[in-house]
Every structure is written in structure tokens, then in C-alpha cells.
Image (cartoon, rainbow, N blue to C red; front, top):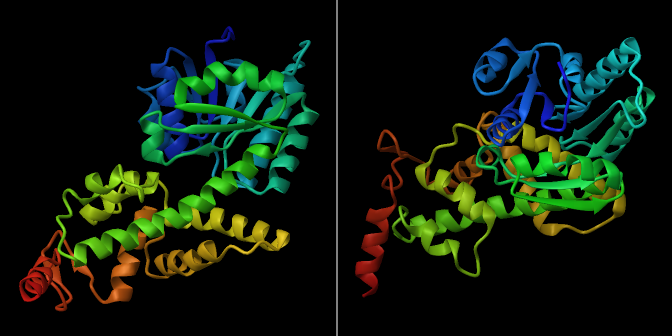
Length: 330
């Protein structure tokens, strides 16, 4: 298959990878995606040009590859597969045999280790984590924090624009993942502050069908209020745009870096037990909006909105208790 600037390979067709691949295809690129899971390949077969279960095959399709993988271990394995394919093919070029934009949230040490593996096969790796949820990825509402060689980032910029809203060259290799850590620290805090605010609003008897819209343009707004607020209002944590279990990995990385730098982070530290509680309460496969349920349980005000059943301490929407309060105060 002839390779040209309009072809892209996507390795890993999970929540983020599948959205990236689909949007690139819609943007006019010919996309080959690879994933070991037959279910994901079947899902994507009608959405992109080519689907394969062999990661190395993407090299025959494009020189520009995106990796969207769940762990450092899987990234290392993919790197070994790709450099073996380059070596077997004895590809010769003036520049790198391929350029890989690595989008996962990992430790800096793991990013550097992967970069060094790729370099053995004359493959250049860029560190390009993404800011945004799976739902945002579907709507091309992502931000790319690209870091690495200026030449590699320039080559990838048309591709970034094909699946994201904004793109930044944040500097030398590793600056991308550092920027993502900072962004995720804010997300961790804003997600819980959204849950706090909406639980407060519900218990005050405010109309939960409109409260997110009312607050969205105010001084206290955040992207988490806008994105996860509606899920909290609906009391629905599926489908998961970011699973609690995966988010725990990101939180652990940030915590480790903060400790190594001896930086006080009281708000971030205060958020950790809430996410830990979500894990212990069996919400690991749910969206991180499920922290709302954790706060409900802490307050003893859990409501099963869909069935209309409650724990006996409050009405399903909190309106009866709030109405009584309003009457007594007027």
C-alpha cells in the first residue's frame, strides 16, 4: 500500500483511539487501526479504511503513527514489534522510518524508555498526551500537548488538527506529559468540586434539569461542570468516558511526582480518598462522574433515580425536603 501524507496509523482502538481514528477518517485521512481485540476491530471495520490485529502492519500504511495504549507494558511491546518490522523490511529513508505520536498518560521514565526502544529502529517518538474525555474525543474537543522535535511536531500537525480542537507545541520531549499532569490535577479537583456543588444544589431544592446550564457561564464554572455535570444530574455513570479504575493510575502518577518535588497540594490530596472510595464501592468501571454517588453516600442521601427508590432518608430528587425548608423560612 502506498504511503503518503494523507495516511495515518492508529495503534490501540479503545475509548480514545477509536474516536481519534474515526475522526481522522472523517477529516479525509486514510486510517489503518490495529487492536488485539476482535470486538474492537469489528466495531471499527466500517469506520476506517483498514483494521488489523497485527500492530506492525500499520507501518505499511503510513509513516505517521498514533499510539493510544492502556499501559507502559503495552507501549513497550508495541515498540518492540514496530522496530522488528522496520529491521525486517530494511527500510531506508533520509529521515526516521516512522514518527510515533504517543498519547497515553504514563510516567516520564516510561515515556523515555519507550522513546529509546523506538530509536533502535530509527523510529522517532513524540510525547503527545491529550486533554479531554472519551466523549470529548468523539466530538473532536481535545487538546494536544505535543512535545519533542519541532520537525516531528510540524509533520504531525495536520493529523492533530484532524482529531482535536486545539494543539500546542509545549517544548522538549517530556514537556507534554508534564503539562498533562498539571491539567489532570485540575481535573481531579474540579470533578469533585462539581459533585459537591451539584449535591448542594439538589439538597437546596434547585431544579437539577437546569442548574448546570445556569452555572455554566458563571464565575464558578469549569469544564468538568460542563462535561460531567449532566451525568451527575442524570445519576448515570455509563458509558464511561474515563473509568475510575484508569483514572486511579493517573492520580497515582501525579501523587508520586508531587511527593518527589515536595510540593504541598492540599486540594489534590483531599480528592484522593474520594476516588479511593469510588474504587472500594465497586465503581471502578464507571465514569469518574460517579464521585457524585460517593458524596451522596457520605451524606447519607443516596437516591436511586431510575427506580424512584431511596434509602428512606430523602426523596428521589430532594425536592420535598427542600420545599418544606422554604415554606418554614418564608
